[in-house]
Length: 129
Picture 1 (cartoon, rainbow, N blue to C red):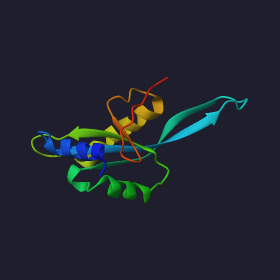
Picture 2 (picture 1 turned 180 degrees about the vertical axis):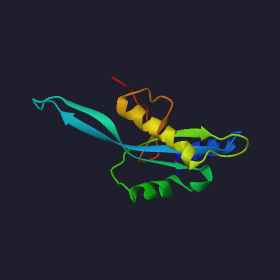
Picture 3 (picture 1 turned 90 degrees about the vertical axis):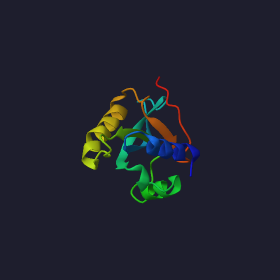
Picture 4 (picture 1 turned 60 degrees about the vertical axis):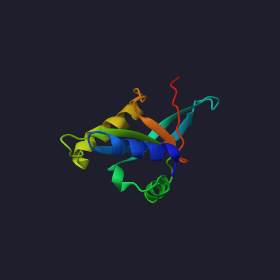
């Protein structure tokens, strides 16, 4: 398992309240200017999923599961959603947060609150120009 991904899962399990992990899969897209000289890019969301930490066995298995749905992803944005009173958040409770993650990426909002990892499970530092 990727050390970073493994650490994320371990940290989620160690929190005082049960966690639900939120994942947004994205891929780079580029477009050229009218004169085909300047290429600009952005990240496009592909799919979202939420899981309890205990539902994730390894980064490799998680990646294969994602690939079985869509293979073009290159990055995963990760966030945690904390439960209350010893209960983990439900999948329904996670939905608005997954929508927010998607909107943050699409609209160019601050994504510094998300951990971003690549296909190898390595951390990525995103910079905005």
